[in-house]
Image (cartoon, rainbow, N blue to C red; front, side, top):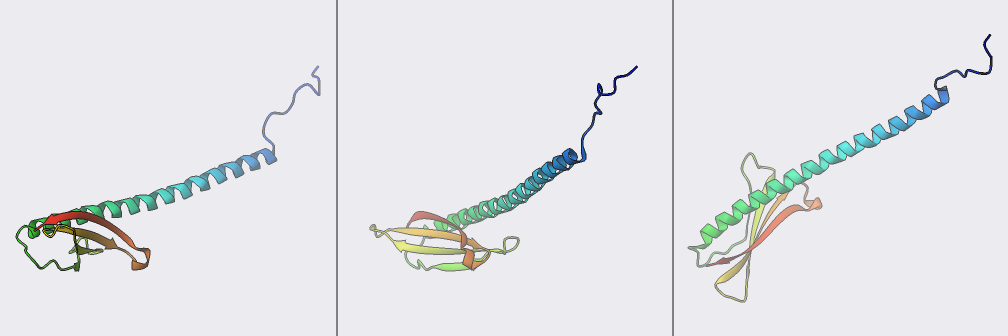
Length: 127
């Protein structure tokens, strides 16, 4: 003979299942938004790295050109050629307290001008 109140039915109630699904769905939505944010940050870092490398290239070229230059320290701004046509560069020169030394600033810009997305490198050049 079996006792009626002795065994409980095992399993989950509908309310417990719904709460568990709600918690899992909140966690998944959070993970998806974190993943999207990570992709955007990665894209930004790639652009900054590419701009830095391009700025180093322009600065190296200016250092080579400066070795034979006595005058003609003019500001320049141009676009890069493909495959970097999204970037443009600007070179500015400033006098220093030493007449034979110039302060050169190379900026690489991209994207919307209102967002001011750029990387700048500063160096000294001797003429």
